[in-house]
Length: 204
Ligand SMILES: C[S@@+](CC[C@H](N)C(=O)[O-])C[C@H]1O[C@@H](n2cnc3c(N)ncnc32)[C@H](O)[C@@H]1O
Image (cartoon, rainbow, N blue to C red; front, top):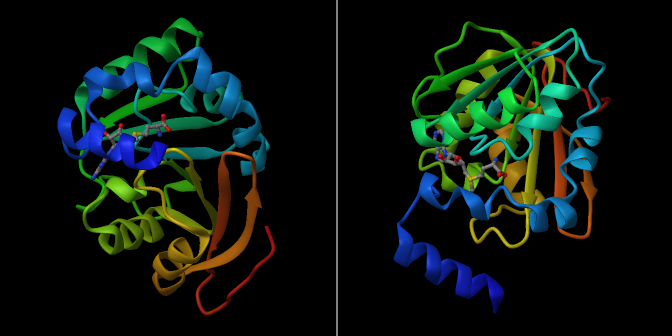
């Protein structure tokens, strides 16, 4: 019921992507209290040295705690909407984070990063909005190092959220091995490991 109301609302306020002028719906104290972004970031399993790509960060709801977990690493944000990146930048700078790069572009076109540039890629409530999901996964497989980690956060009430089975169907044919799915009250954190060439591993 709430799902269908949200779906209708999004159809009225604008089709995909989620409009940057409505970013207050993504970054507010109520969502923070319910979704606890820190606990999602904990589940990625970072040690603080990684080079991380966050695709579709929006106004930076997860990016702020993510940047805080990378004292010796680096975070790159990539979003189709400059307005979202401006908001993310403001929020990150206000929180004192300088170890962040900002990139505008489309995730279903080739990502503008070198092969194997990242240890980790993180996507929260984004993949459902990407029109060519297979092209996006193929591009992620190129920019994540062999053995690196791909993490999806898919949560209620996002009307575009994908199930664990749908994520596996997308990721596994594109050189990722399913590692685990950590279920929470509001959604799942689903982790994949980028295959070493010819080797499929499930260990994170
Ligand atoms: C629903 S919002 C989620 C934002 C953030 N991850 C969060 O959970 O608060 C989806 C984000 O993905 C971005 N996005 C959608 N399609 C995209 C694409 N094809 N390439 C890059 N970013 C995209 C949107 O601009 C938006 O910032």
